[in-house]
Length: 436
Image (cartoon, rainbow, N blue to C red):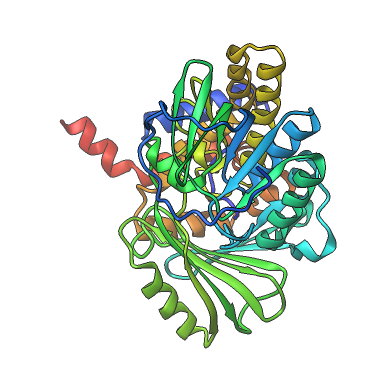
């Protein structure tokens, strides 16, 4: 999805100076076998004294979604013995997210999705304040597409399988533990060793690793109130604390609507919204949103987390197709090197490289999100009024980068505007602080 606002630059400042100033400001405020396994995930420990005679895999991948499938492709192309274990009986089911991503991001993942995967192209983003004030952003330059995630995941699975990866559906790794130079996996009643485990198990793996998420929901609806080429974002800290509500069209009369927030009843809110818009609901699903940043570490011995399992989803929007997908690719490459060089220490290059590309961006997004979560409804309205009457929307349209939006939007806002905005919305807090 599209980002909420954050901040920006003086023409005199170079990008590095801008980032540092913004960051300081925000800190201050803030077997080619198909199993039918039904085992539930247990702890990360298990008995390993009864091993079967199955050969050790080079790499096992927990989770058959974007990160896991891209990692599987990378490893198979390196000639390694890799298996992807997906707990559901069909790749891509249930659908994992809304499928919003930039064409540039998809290209960087080294894939060209077939035409049946692309559902729509978005040209505009419309943000609504609590009182329904509007800010429109031209998104033509960002080339944002909406993908059918179910079809896209199947496409990636085919690519991985053609490269030589083995895909096991309806097959769940319920437990795993590391011992010596192997990680032992419990799959139903079997125990199978592998040299490296890539945990791309999504939300559950992230939570078990110490992460947290917001409760979210997503509906597929039929209606006629929206424009096919425009995404809608509704920001209201009273109704959707800590996040927002969204509408993502996939055709002229079908859209994905969703909402997330702290302590909210997502289905109740979406039922009400659908009723207000006289929309017909075609599907309902719970959709937790990961927006609290990455885990402290992606590695623990020979177990490596990537994608949502590592928290590689944008803190502002929860989107992670590109950032998590690239995490899968980097993890796959690092695992291949570690096995070929017989040196597990090289696994750390994966985390280093991912953080070098996204660490600063995620840090800024997280702090910006923390800032906006402190705003009250009337303050959001005032912010909308200020931005709508300025050149900021036009500059955001020209500068915005869907995959690194914080820096681009910062350039559009201007450092002076950032400072005045902080003063405007936190004057009472500053007065209280000074008066103590």
